[in-house]
Length: 207
Image 1 (cartoon, rainbow, N blue to C red):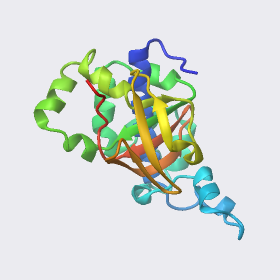
Image 2: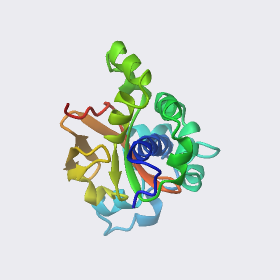
Image 3: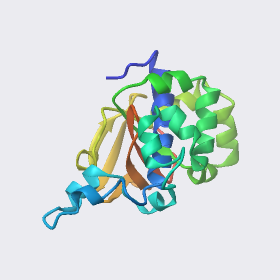
Image 4: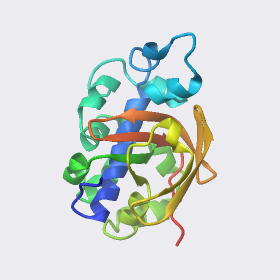
């Protein structure tokens, strides 16, 4: 499913895609999310499966380059570049020279850390990662990418990452946590080639 040039590039691409989606999710506000499934018999589960969810989605603009409609038309790297709250993730993807790879990736799910998530890391750790794009940075970014486009109903469970390790997602409906402490703040965002879940903590693989 990963049509990437290499595992390293796929991971970063996945992460960027995630960032993109997160941006889209932030702009979940009005007409793209729940109106189509708002029938009396619609369950919370089916509603989340059809559109973005999460508190951070309220920040997504209703129109323009960063809107949900626009993000759905763009590949993840392009979409992420239109999302200010994902600027640190975009910087990381650019440092790894994976923008083109990310845009050409197909069928992935990315768990995209927000700017606040990166800011929560100790500065020496963040600086070290950004200064080692082919080593530590790639390892961390690939840990945020999962094969296949996961719907909310498929999210809970253990998922193998491109980095080779696994992440554990718990929760249901509109409340999910990754690896015990990273919350999905805006999820199920669609880009042209990926599904993204915006998270509030950077995921760190076991060494």
